[in-house]
Image 1 (tube, chains in turn purple, brown):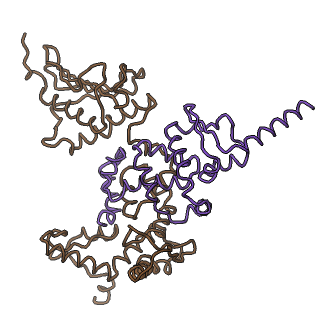
Image 2 (tube, helix red, strand yellow):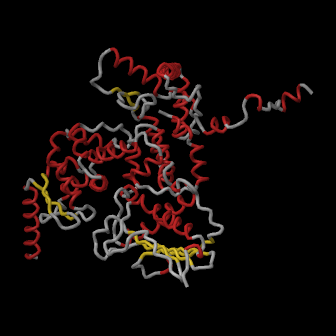
Image 3 (cartoon, chains in turn red, brown):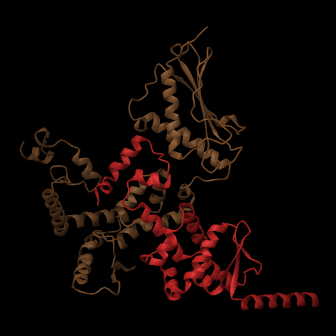
Length: 186
Length: 328
């Protein structure tokens, strides 16, 4: 019983020590460690906020097996550099009404942040933001990809995103007739 | 015994077919593997056979010394009208995935001019070539650059589609492949509802007014001045389908509502005036955007089908059954 009690105390002490730390350590799928401020992580990511509140953050690095090191580096970069520029109240309201509210246009620094990314890094970041519940980062990255689709014909979209055209010619003709209005707009 | 190229079943045709398959691989960014085969290089015809072969690998694998590759072999024997087409992955042990076709060259009509627009080239590029490269990448745990869009989860794809600036963009994305069409139709309400509520129909660059959950317009702060006020008035009056909301008895889908709103908007005087101005400008500059005369674009499927029917002197007007009954 005493041993159990001792273990419980040690656990309690560890949790208190973790709570006192200002940073959170995240481990990518390939084992690299990244540190991010606890406040920024909690403000920008609903998943990390939940983990911090629940005390499930590992001191030696919380495993994020779905996220590669390059994507996690970008996530941490985004959190560390820019967390202060987003009011937390706006984030809270956006997370509640995310499915219905209109999306805010990315700010200048956010545009620059995603513009420097390669095609693959951008998609990795979308996946990471989706996994970590980072609404604003998802907003910015998805906006960038939707801009790449904007005003393009189906052929051009296929070319940009390397999408295979798996329609038969008859099916394609039928769809083009059904959605003919979309080809006359603009 | 010396054998000339002519003794084979249309040697030129075989070479042309080889070049066509080679061209079908190119859009996917394939490269020759470093282990050394020159891609698409035809061997010299010998007395026994004519063989065109090539090896192709994905760009990510090209730096590997022992890179796995897709192999193409076209083989023709002298005095025989058939050509064997074999395509496979060189390290695949399972021969069930091997593509093997016997082609009758006499019946094979290869297109002249630009091959890329032909049905054969279309089927090769989107069929066997794409399939082999896809298999090659999967076997090596890789994805082709740009192929990441396909591997995104549906939720993330839907978030991207929601941010498209107009319904026309969403419809054009729907036309790209079956997977995206399935995604759009499975999330029809979510995506089109968003388009209907949040995307203004006449100007998508700077949205300033939106509908909230109760369909009340919500104005974004910080825009003042007479121009802003006029613009906001026009947006509220013309951008949002008030008539559709009133007439909706729960039967219309969000896509139908969007289309009806769009049609209502296109019928309004402001839009027609804008189109007329555009036509006048085009006439002045000598660049007629409508190709000589105004063509009214079909607004939906039914209009489009109607427009394909006979017009003018060729049209046959049959009186309705009621008319005939009354005037019998």
